Image (tube, rainbow, N blue to C red; front, side):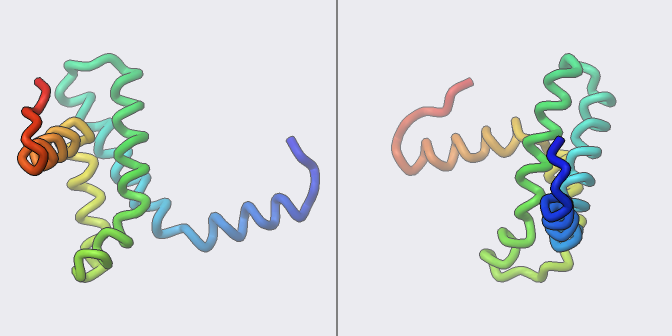
Length: 108
């Protein structure tokens, strides 16, 4: 690992500045893992991949709420819903919406 103190200082500053986004991502990822364990249908690597994608979406939930002109206090609840519903749900909804706009039938 790089031993430069400036690198570690920049990394710690970035983590401190994005602490709330990191907590949203952690909550969504944890919820996705718990949902995957509860359902028990998919292998562990797929649960971890789903949790990582949910965490990535939840990292930007405040920006999404701002874009939709909603209160940013809903970010924690929104990140739980992102983790609970999962990426498969969001991708199927996105496919249906895009399919209805373009006339392409959704894949099964």
